[in-house]
Image (cartoon, rainbow, N blue to C red; front, side, top):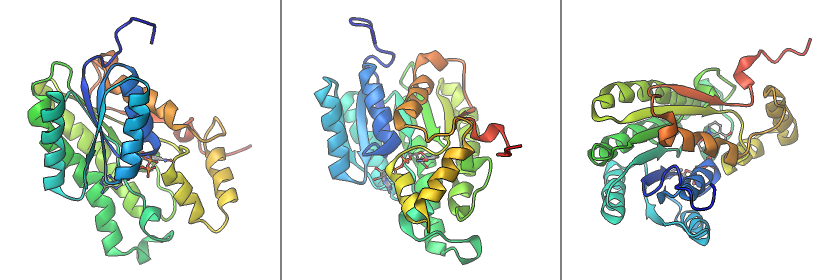
Length: 269
Ligand SMILES: NC(=O)c1ccc[n+]([C@@H]2O[C@H](COP(=O)([O-])OP(=O)(O)OC[C@H]3O[C@@H](n4cnc5c(N)ncnc54)[C@H](O)[C@@H]3O)[C@@H](O)[C@H]2O)c1
């Protein structure tokens, strides 16, 4: 941002779920750098407070609010407290999610535990709807309202041992379209994006759960046309674009930020 120029989210309030680490932290910091006031929402108070500290160190305003995305009451309290503290909500960035490998070993679909399926769907899909539901009463009053959900390339193409995750992310894609359809009348835009493999703690856990992490990492890099992992800061630029007025005529869509992974079939010859 040029010195003295207004930021692209100047004065606007963003609620970012899962902002304690990974892409959520990077997006929260990017939004704050663009003049936004950011609510750092996470179940982990230690990492969430660290994100707030990083934002405040750069001179911007942030507040940590603890939330358990498996609880509707906790999500409602998050939105109410965010709006009470900062005077409204302009942007909801529903970023938090869990992967099977956050909860259990790599598991094929016929052996997948029902409890794991439920947790993945509660956090990755149901909570995105509940965040939307409880944020809309505030977003309705914003002249720049935007919801940015996070799906995955796994919403478009499956990969092994991730049935619950891929199914939940497919749901986020459709929920995004349904939300855009219902909320356009309030001037609320709703979009999502699909990252490829991005270097975050979630990816670290996924690799650590593999029999040969180095081989899997090589495979993930090779699945991208750009032949490397993505960085959270690269994804945060897209989150910002979809959150601010630069995307003012875009709603109900899904953007790939995947190093070209879905553009090809991975054939070498
Ligand atoms: N990392 C990747 O390669 C990748 C690829 C495609 C999509 N994604 C998606 O991008 C988003 C961010 O992923 P990441 O890799 O940064 O994840 P991450 O695991 O590094 O961070 C997720 C954050 O969500 C929080 N969280 C988890 N459960 C919660 C709950 N019940 N209540 C509140 N907070 C909770 C965690 O504490 C953590 O801070 C997710 O939606 C993920 O599915 C990630």
